[in-house]
Image (tube, rainbow, N blue to C red; front, side):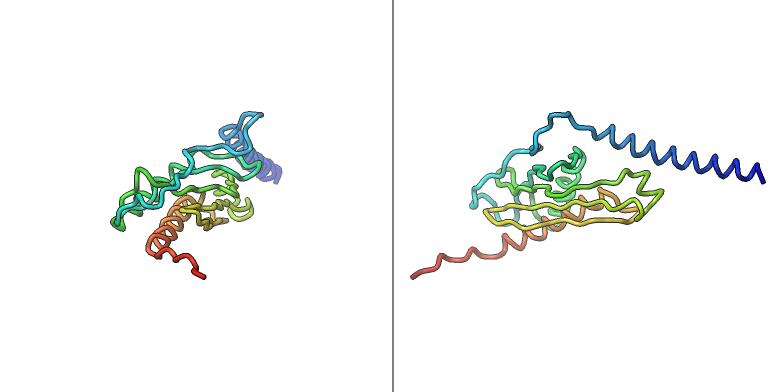
Length: 181
């Protein structure tokens, strides 16, 4: 009986230590300078040139963080950008080198991966919400996941797909003529 109790305590301590290491590792890996700017820009600002896309082109995406005190993750934008380009190519579109659409991260939360796997939905949820601006029009793209297996990579793919789909609709919708009096 005492041996069983000792093993249970030992296993519980190992589990707790593993979870603490996960939290600690993630926090240290994503640590930001004490005097970080409120808005950290990862890429160039969007250009306002509406007539530069050819028929089978989509705008290049740029990213800006504007999510308050969230800790930006430098891996998020490359995942969104690559998935966006891959999905556009799969639909027969090329990414423009000149015209851009700006993606602004407005809400971001990532669970430490080990904690997500160990505790699942009890560890909370990963959140990625964005505002996309293209040719003066804003729309949102985002999702959340409390799933054990779907982490931030999944959310980046979802945001990229939503962004591409909404941009394609925007490009296919003719501009509304100015109201005449």
